[in-house]
Length: 424
Image (cartoon, rainbow, N blue to C red; front, side, top):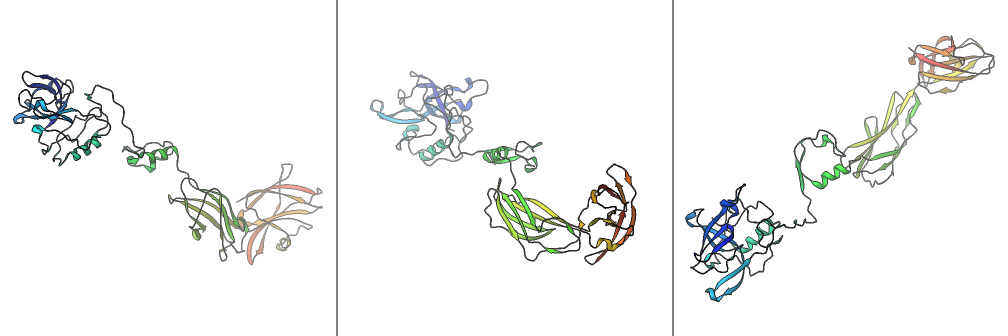
């Protein structure tokens, strides 16, 4: 086993020293990690060792209490002829990156440059590179491999730093993104982050994605000025017609718009996928053969999709009904023919009113019996009036329809307003 150590003191008389081996530190004290060691050199030859030098130590007979200093962790700088040609060294100058001359090598015992050195495989701290968990399982084939490993492991250090000197924080590369992991499911919405979108929490999600979702919540596309031709709303029952066009303005929000669809009820009648939607971009669907069946309710829907494949939509409907009739009669005798020449009105509210213009005539109202069996009439004074009820048959677009026709009393007032309420 070969470990890094630092010389604490040197006894030149005995050719020994005391070394601090960080690997043996315990939480409460470093005393147990300061051991007496011998130099692996002939007596009196110390090859430039000084107090505070960083050195490699091996262990005699693999006993941890018999360390032997076998060489510097440093840069050879000169040859000392007075010491038998031994190479003197200086302490390694460690920066945030290990940058050494190409001719640099790690000096090992007996100047054997072909020996392979086991080095530390795990760095526990940023203050020094020497607190390691154990040896690398394989030997490095060259010092270049050693340098590459140091280059990736070193974060902070300083010249001869023993862990007590302050060091500057490492620089962060401009392209560093990082990830965030928290597997606890979200319990509430936070900013733009929806709990439903992260049922399993976060697992190595890029930090930029998390911040974007938090600070810039998703917004779906916006549909404005939605219109249908012919105009939707109440239509006369029994008269079919063709759908001509659908128009709208679409605004892109968080994601690009990828598809727009037009529907008649549940049937897709048009699709657009070649799009360049930005702000209030106009779109149009035109049709030649889409027939609107004049019964019940026919719904027109526009759906807009973005890259999330989620649709936003707007709808409008055609509601087909039989009309109501309002008029006056010179006689009290009423029949279905009375409605033939009167302009109808399309209404479906249960509460409604009408102002009659009369000349001592009888006002009347007629509506489909299916709307309700009973009619309450209130005059302008707030008094409930009793109108005569008639059941008649009325033909509309070839369909015979049951109608209720109510007539009131003649009045000397030329304009009179009545309020009506239909009920079952």
